[in-house]
Image 1 (cartoon, one colour):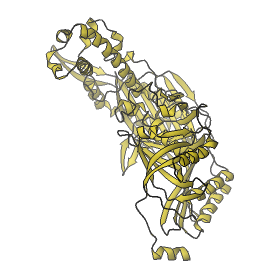
Image 2: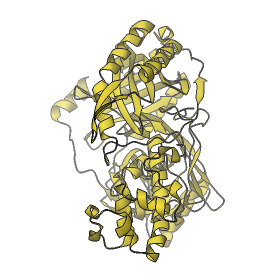
Image 3: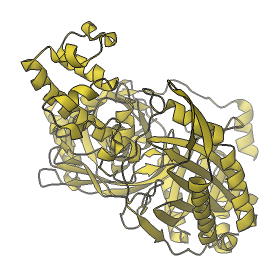
Image 4: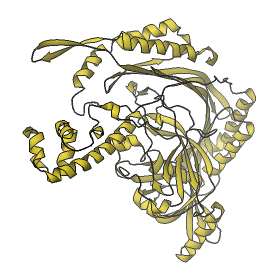
Length: 609
């Protein structure tokens, strides 16, 4: 149980492991030279250990009964060893019952795993001076000790469990429902980070309820859908009742779907749907420094200071310190203090989300751009500097202009001698001088687990820049939320349109390389200018991001809270948001193309269940 897990003792073991790694983890490396054969002894200059664990219970209710109950107690650990500028990642260990390990046993296992890394140390040293071979530069981080008070783990009370069980039974008893399952995951996640400068222990309580219902709609089509909700602790019966009513509204169990042809329509995005836009198309991914520096997406690369006219008066903030925020935390998974970040301010792009590595790479880009400018001005005065300071084998003749030549030579580390002998700022030349990279990350390095099982194979996971709590704030330039529906009706009348679409959504995605943005709604209403409403079977909305931004008409001021999990290559992490509703003119809509008509046997089952 959770009370048996002593995180402070585990942190002591990890501190001993750091000491062992930086004093006893040695590897002799053969270093050939012109004068003979030399050996060097490689010792990591630093080490960090991060352990992510979870403890809790899982309850599964099905059609009015408790299907099973189980406990969760598992964790994963990652060790990073640093040699010069390079990180050697290893010692990925998984524990199914961490509380059963003694302090001595855990230390022995970690030491044994570290000794297996010795060949990797030699390889890292060999590759260190090669170009683009696993180079990772670390932006600095401050020394910190932070030990959060350990929370009490509360099991789901019997009366709450019985209420959820009855809810599953009530849904199943509806005449058109095939099945209803409700899963409850009640847990506490814990995060321990230790390196030479830091010791951090954090806890995050979480309870998730997922309701999945398979039913027959009034068009005789079989629909399977689910509704999720997340809580920072045990919810009350009133909160579960609110979720039950929301589930009825969203799944529209008794309402007939109306047809809507594929086409382009004016749309009123409710706060849940605008959250999908701000999350997927801007804040969580395309403004991630990880995506930008590794060229996963170049849409917002080097666009700091650029204004997005349709977002004038809008601030997009990432706030990991938001009180009771679902994505709140104090320190990220690299031990860096999480900061409040203005990604967009009054429509102007201000920052990217960063971890230590991507922040260092952003600084590299800034220094390179400034250095290129200075070298350009010097070489324009004397073209012979290339011949004087650059070796012929670099073949810079293949480049058409000096700027391309300089960028190529910087990448090849071939301008050191020139930089030292011409009138430019040598401090901008960070290559070989990692101490010149001084910017700290803004503390958004996050990961679900250090290893994940995928098709029965375990794979390593790396943390990356991820969102925390997304907050959209507004100025007086925006229309108030209570007037958006009225404004939408007026716009439709002016354009001689009979209706617009009102959309609720929790899911969507963006293609980082192309900027194609997709909303996958769970409910769509066709709203006529006379007030009549018709429920439309949800399809998908998709549009290029730049076109989407140009089609934004109004953004409301009444934010609503959303809690969810965000997925990326580093797994699923909890995120929160406070977003408004929004009018977007002319979004392409694609109707659902597959239909699952109930068979006679399935209808007989409903009649006699």
